[in-house]
Length: 197
Image 1 (spheres, rainbow, N blue to C red):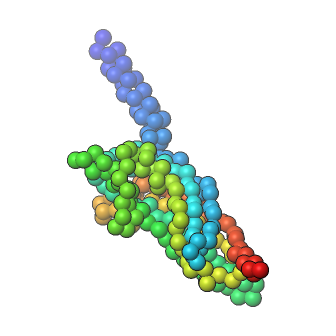
Image 2 (tube, rainbow, N blue to C red):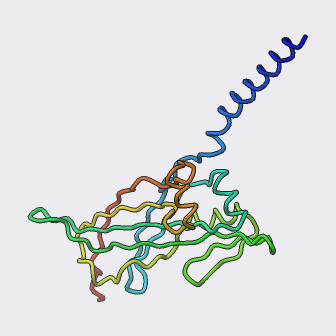
Image 3 (spheres, rainbow, N blue to C red):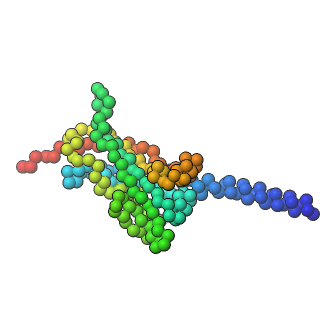
């Protein structure tokens, strides 16, 4: 009788371990981030960018934010002028960092960029804000020659260098803290304005 119950306990433990192994990767790792839209626009003598991303946080990241750990998301942008006779000229090399926080006392989510923040009602609303960049001024228009084709690339990443030191060590050891999109290439040119008649 004791041998049968011991065998049943072992089978239950093995079944639980197998079930956890099957579920843990899904819970710990999120789908990779993607750049879904890139629109270089001209406004107020500036080149501005509208960018959309597809990304979700995994359970480890959500738990960290819900316990007061801010997460920093950085959008990296590089624009080059190709040259056949030498290395490409870098016209723009910039980044935009936004912070996701949750205040456990007020139960309020916030998305911040610099000193400006936007309070939102839920994690889904916060993620909707983080998935879009609108009207990002990246360079004055006089840095670009008209009717010349420029090549750019853009990505978004969870900036683990801004995490607290214990979490940075944990981030190096675990893939659960990895959220980065592949570089997405694009090209554009700025048209010469037609003379006014």
